[in-house]
Image (tube, rainbow, N blue to C red; front, side):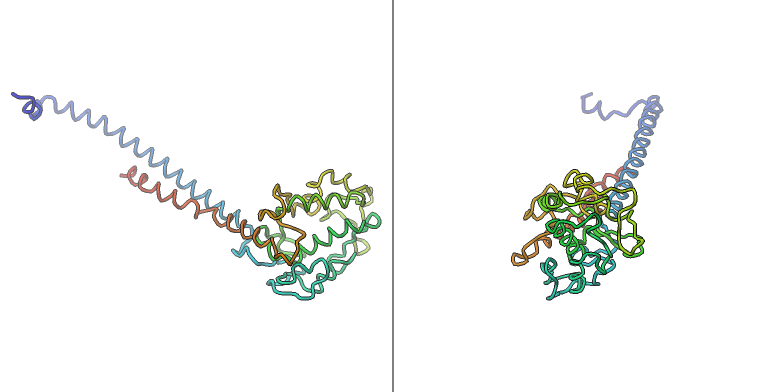
Length: 291
């Protein structure tokens, strides 16, 4: 009998039970292995979907989806940005498209204004060079329509939204700190803890006035702590398109439009949209395991 014929020869009937046992013994672990792998893959896929969904929810910092050309839902902001030809002095760079009115821009330049009754001179007269930065900070906060990616909802009596961790260009923060080194203050967080008995902020009785570096040892301490992390000092420089400029020349356009667009696009790419291709690629594997 040839080798070919021997390969085709029927097995001995006595060996069939042994072969069947071997098939069963090998088949059961394979099926169990597939089931275990399917369970693991299903768990991983569900975890991936959860992470992607969570990322989408947390990266979209405001409930509504509009991150570009928007105004905060706060005390003095307009509902929508629009041109304001008569914005006052330091707020004028935003006149082509602004979230603040002309009246708000005028009040932003006053001490103990009708905006928030805040007294810049709570430890004696603030140096003019220092005060210019706080006026500019107020103008940016009140007027800019380019802060959408950093707007978050808050539960406060005077506003429903705030900004958090706006990436402020490092030069703007450094200059702010340098120009305020000789001015005095009594607190490191200006959002809370003041004495408002007279209708405007005064230093608490246990707070002593010191030069700014006492409460803000570094530029980052000033920019990040003073308004409860409204700003975060960026490693990027002015003109990079990756950080918000407090100061800019309107004749050259508003550089913060590009910055807001960059971060809004980055946020929109996080979530299920980014995980979609991976989920699709894993689907055939999961189907095979489930067979």
